Image (cartoon, rainbow, N blue to C red; front, top):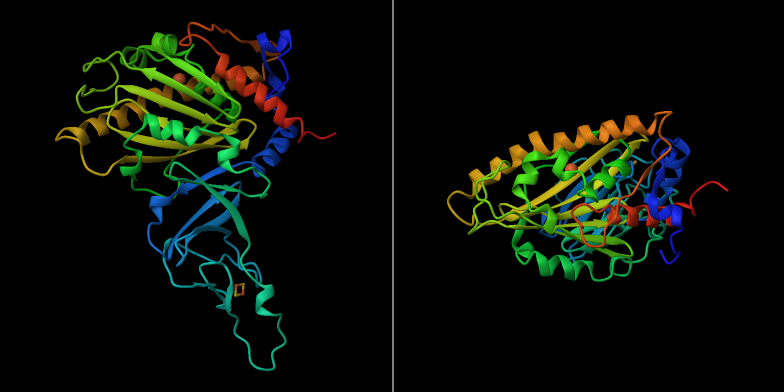
Length: 376
Ligand code: FES
Ligand SMILES: [Fe+2]
């Protein structure tokens, strides 16, 4: 981050092999293990005893709301012989393994292990669930599988305050129905291609006709921080636009979008007040799974809100996401073209609606981090 960019780095994007190479992905998997990964939202397990099962980095995990009020994360595996400990979400007083019925407290300590007085068995105190480091950001729960990441407040100082300041209704929003990490979107492109696309609006005019009509792209501003970026994106304040109906009285008319190093994006889209957080999971060098947890206001703002919400969801799924997916998949094919080695950045300190400096910032931060994980 503190290394000044070389003249070439200021103009040329990541070499194409970073988007196609298995060895790069292996290094990235180690980087992801060491970083904070979105796992859920505190409002998904509001009461003591509530459990939420999910998967992070290919690992089954379970989030547990303890009797002491703390939310903890554990690997969802029984220390006895490795059976999956918790089969489904719900509310329990203890966690009992279906295999041999060993049971564990909500704090992960062993409670019962089926033994007689003469059974030879290890001491209870030596056996417990493997806990995973957990931290929170604006209500969202993040886990760090290796336990090596600095606290989120240290990783991205000021980010939570920034989110809360620009999304004042966030605390009163609730997760939309669905599985732990909401809906999933698969794209046949490298995860960094998706992020590159997220971090610039150079493409918004030419490639998103309806989005361009909804927004005032020229008014977009990006602010860069060591491990996050913040984009403020005003709409054109048009109730009737080519994307979805906007209620200028009740809806959000300025979008706020964040990226958090390495693979989280979150923000508030214009329209009905809500908030989203997504994790971009690399599946292969050419495939990404984007898992999104969406929040919405608990109480409708007005009688037409749900209808506008549906209209925006339809547009989001069927129009803008499709457009972005097709752009990213085309770029991914380009990454394997013999005629392409690396691209060019366009940056402009004045015109953030055209500039790719936030994407360049991501690349710079990424290269700095990945160097530590690359094979010597
Ligand atoms: S594997 Fe869980 S009790 Fe045996
Ligand atoms: Fe886009």
